[in-house]
Image (tube, rainbow, N blue to C red; front, side, top):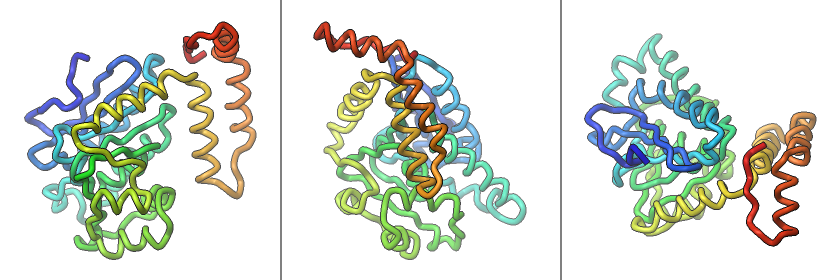
Length: 269
């Protein structure tokens, strides 16, 4: 890989690197615990689009640079200029675009969480399909402590992870949850020692990447649609996603590999 996923840079940025079938999208603002600036929010959809457009990419991993934080949330130093008056609406638009890009990614997404995962950083992680974290990680949405009205559009990913009463606890109190509590209530899928985290996430991504991409994307499409529109899912679109798997070369390859007792070599078509 030409660019280390944990590389340190002087200027806040979203970095993108590809390692075989894995795309790494990194929040990199280590001097402020990877707090997200407006320019970083703006760059996230571009990074997701690059991963989705690359046929070689099968899994996207989001992480923070270094090991202190996934992200401490939106960069509060910008709030006086970017989150007051008319500018606040523009900032929310940037947030919406970033969250929606991750939520609607065609490729599976994994949040690899070291350390602090707060505010907009936690919202970003909740937009991922899976969240794997170290055992020292901490979680909070401190909007109420800052007088921020939490946008209704950003509550949906919280409610997809935790029950309404827990979502209210998060937003009413702004309290920090340690890793064990976050796992218990459903904010994260798994917690591991920090030394084991990256290897475990790479192994999970590799396991997903080895499977038929159309099958994985169909499963993601079905689960997301059933979760977000349970009363009226678009069954026509879901049936088409499943039918595309049966019509694919990968389905033929999977059958042949099973009969020949070998690992299949899927190509995503």
